[in-house]
Image (tube, rainbow, N blue to C red; front, side, top):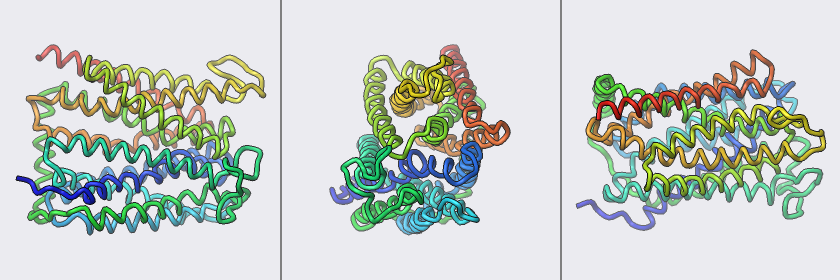
Length: 447
């Protein structure tokens, strides 16, 4: 019988998601990324292109090594030393983002810092996730995972409220949402509120990761690193042989890679697009982020409700279609047009339309991610062991997570247009949807 983990140990593990969330919310999505693209380069299109290459390049590094680190996480030694090492890399990288000052002669250190923080964030999650099955009984794993995910979501909303209340100035004002000057004398003219998102993410992480290191138990594994890697390589070969026997499986996994990559693009570049094309401030982007997060939580709940009654396939298909439609709609929104129709420069309609699109992205994205995990079970049952199937699903997401950002970087660089640069997301969702329909038909034909 599995030894029961203390309540402090469980909360320590869940708080790790809360601790790491500000980096994804503030740096990658809503605050630092739009500032980086709009304020550090001669034009927003160049900034968007560089950001795409940075995110994509970091994603390639993670994709190349994630399977082998996953093997180390699953089968070798204690995990906390690995988590601590990558946490240190993450914290140093986050603090380095403060150097992204306007007019800097060189941004090389900023590039290195972002890649370090990104890699640290991804790798430490690999090892903390690997600890999950050792914390609770198998029947409780899904619930604990969901609680941790939800707590991270809440952390994203809380940190955005913090930024609005104490750091970012409201449009046309020198004060924050609660009527005070930015804390610590941060100067908006020097981009300091946005630059502070890196150090704030680091400090937040240091504080809230402490319970994990103090209280969450760590059970060493007996396998040596070389043996674990050899086993992983052999397992990948066996999985490939199995996938070739069932075409519907590789169609589904390829589909999930593409539509999840499309969602990565929307999350990574939506705020950059809003700042560059619509001229939104960090304050407005914060409001946008909060509304999108709330919509995401509601979408995941509603998607789960439909999933329980109709199954995951209708939820995932409808979500992908919604994301495809909203991606096309976003490309038609400028300061003077919505859905191809001209509006006055003073009209609030473009901003309202983009907020609505953000809500749809949040809701459909939340539902799609939640039900996609159920869809894995539906497709692989009787064909692959569940642990192996979810390993392939996770690896598939990591293996191609760089395609979308790099595609955006290339298209933006070639066209010199932010709007055109986002267009690859349409192809990702469209091809993903077609492959999912084909996988569904193949599954029906063989069942």
